[in-house]
Amino acid sequence: MKAFIVNGPGVAELGEWPTPRRVRGDVVVTPQRVGICGTDLELVDGTLDPSYVRYPLVLGHEWVGRIEHEVAGVGPTGTPVVVEGIVPCNTCDECARGATNLCMTYDEIGFTRAGALAEHVRAPEGLVHVLSDVVALDDAVFIEPMAVVWRALTRMPLRHRLRVAVIGDGPIALLAAHMMRLFKPTSIIVFGQRAEQRELAERAGADDFLVTPPTDRFDLIIEASGSQQGVTTAMSHCERGAIVILLGLPPHGSKVDLSPGDIVNNDLVIQGSFSYTRASFREVVQRVNNLELRPSFLITHRFTLESVGPALAALRGGTNEPRGKIVIDVAGD
Image (cartoon, rainbow, N blue to C red; front, side, top):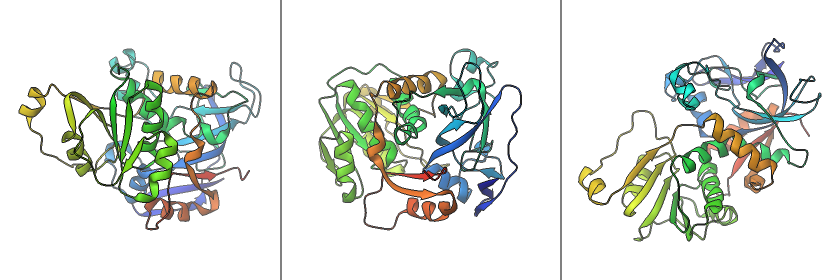
């Protein structure tokens, strides 16, 4: 079958990959939409922590598809589904307490297993979630990144009427602003880098979009830029008692200076969040099926499986145009 393959750092192309066969406990799915993100660039470039990748690999960890065969408990051929990417062992202590994102055996579709930038993909049946017929595929393709955001937002209880700042203007930052509306904040300010992102940020739910951070302080700061400077900015805009969520992932090995005295005296909570759990993925699927989350307005670019190379180039930027989610229409519909 055709697939977009990363053979090793810096070596990526559309090529031939073995067509997956169905085995007991697995399903074979035809991908329909696949989102690409900055992590895919790291996989292509070879800059991701090597603990989380196995080459050669087929890219594609944000996706929605249709099952190719009837599956008892799932549905008939053609049923629209999303699939959790993290494949937990279900036996280690982390899995037992529900922290499947920390499974002692790291295994993930699009990282250590063949991903969805292909004509077919095989996945464990237990990770498949059925979508309602009323859900648009363009909304469903966001479920994986929304699960990442949702896990970060729900790891600690968030009260209503928070003054919120989101640092970053990429899809994760925009999804964070969009999903924070469910928590009834007083205001959401997005600190971005590109003025062209203003309209997307406002559509996502931001009350204001700034390219120069103000002097204001906030109750909740979500760092979603994945940069060292973003973390520094987050820590410098904390109201006393604030929560800082580190959602972006700076380059491997990055370090920033922190003042323990300020953290203690200001009663701050600094929370990291890695990926998503089975529970957070399931909760996002429920909200999408209930039409509570409809983020398809963030799609700004579309490509085909034959043009993944240009799609990755668009993801790297360099143009003065709004850039939200870049989606590959694998099925060509």
